[in-house]
Image 1 (cartoon, rainbow, N blue to C red):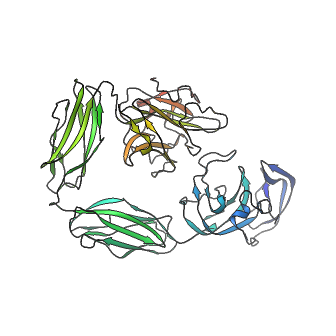
Image 2 (cartoon, one colour):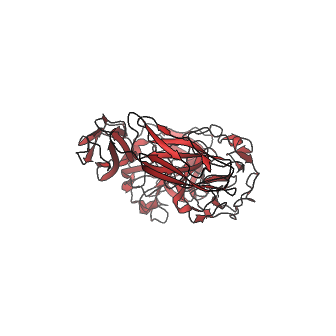
Image 3 (cartoon, rainbow, N blue to C red):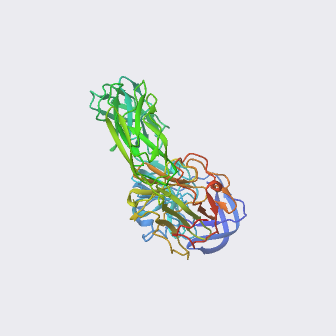
Length: 517
């Protein structure tokens, strides 16, 4: 105990790992961290073996533990631990993203000396984590020094994706479905596979993810077309994932299965996009779907000509000048699907869109405003805002909304602290820690993308999209009221100048109230 200390060396020459040194300086307390502010550092010998880490229980060195103060600055090791939380919110003086995760007893593992990449998932196990015990930002935390300080536990499956795929009868491929581990395999890992029923779908009993790799394709053979999906189950060390595989053929019955949106509300003389999805991909000869609007309130293309193996078809619906209700009917050999249509001057657009974005300065001042422009109430409990940090293609934290949002209603999701006003916030969440170069999207009913701010999978080098005050960096921007549908392609280039207007930095005056700039 009390055998280590943080030395603040300022501009002095830094010693090497393994050096024994004599340090002269002043003891101090830097926001709770005990440190020695060095005046001089003299190396007396080099290349010495490092001390063995002190093996401790996480609860003993986490905040409130019995040994945190005694072991501050000491090399410690925790063993057989499980990740309990990721994307930890910033403590005092820190900023998001923290790149911290918590293990047993809530003990944080930080990136001050080494960034753990890929970041772990909740539930991931480590045989051991070694690092310096440090106090910073109001918490005791472990600081690993390199990848060798983290020894993984049993390998586990992170995903089996996509969760549902289509496979043509008589074909074999490993390009449709992939199994991924939480992190690259330290040694060859054998993943067990079960495909059922084997009269419909077969696969090998196992596949190997070789050392250093993280993902492998799953070989699948479509034996016999069946309207009921078969399943693939992948298992490894107690972790398990399941995916559906629907085997089809040219002879499979096709029906119009889904349409998005499920209720189309349009202003007169407007254009909206509709997407029709089949139950299985189109046959090799293609497929025509007849589309009719009995009341004539809108014009649509007909037929919709699906190319071979095409599953979805997106087309434009153009409303006429007359208001009223009607139906858009899709027909495949008598199998029909109806889309209710309302043409009304009160209907300004489609679905939900972001209408204000605030990425402020001075503490956490983050907010997005969401407006329902669909003309009918929306159940927000089926909607989430997803955050994509630093150019990530997979969502980091997600924020489920709540309540029912009436037509033309406004809902705000915020993270305000350090004295920032919270008026106008329907949901204040400390986990909403985006920066100007992080993308956000709004998704309802699991798969219905409503809108995007930024470009998913891309991180602008300037710290944000746009320039000056019309930017996602340190700025407030408002959506133009001429926008009738959100950005439903998260991969396309994002330029706020096309649909947004600059506001005043840190200004929350209009937050929660839709205003037209």
